[in-house]
Image (cartoon, rainbow, N blue to C red; front, side, top):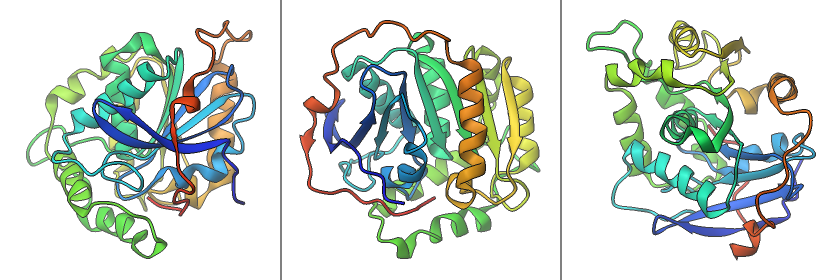
Length: 273
């Protein structure tokens, strides 16, 4: 199924050009979709079609697809791009749905500016190890396999961006784990099960550390939304139905979003990691 977005183009955030596409109800609850490393916004095409009644926005992370290639790919810069987009489009009570490093960025954004984020969906979250010598390190062979699965898909990205992100996420980060208790948003965590490069028991630990989190497992591997699209959508939509307000708040602004985009003729829509 090919999803027809109402607008596809670019928006400048923090001095960086980001590929962006939008569809749905401009006055609906905003949902921002964040792909994983080596992928693109097009990976969300099938899922976006299920988000009826919401304002759906998918972006290409810096260094990927139609977004600019930059000199640095610090994880904090990905977080700041997400927050910059939310501010630029004046979104509030935003739902962030992120896969892998996109999930990492979504969680980081929620911690940095909790007043802007309403709910989180973290699909096979790229959670770093807790400490050196941890027995729950990301499996590098499986991680490379997940990325290699998109090499022939026609997806465009800078290899240095992917390598930098994977390197940072493989480093132990006790401070990251220590902050999980500060997450205030209702959170759904999805695990790809034993076939994934993200150890399921690590995601169980993350779930236990976040006050209002629930874990669901769809055992198909790292790319849950691509490999089990119906099951993924059912879990996410059920979660949103349980956590979204019964009456949508009045819109904060009169929909500038895609009007501010510089239109592009096309954008990659390949299924990716």
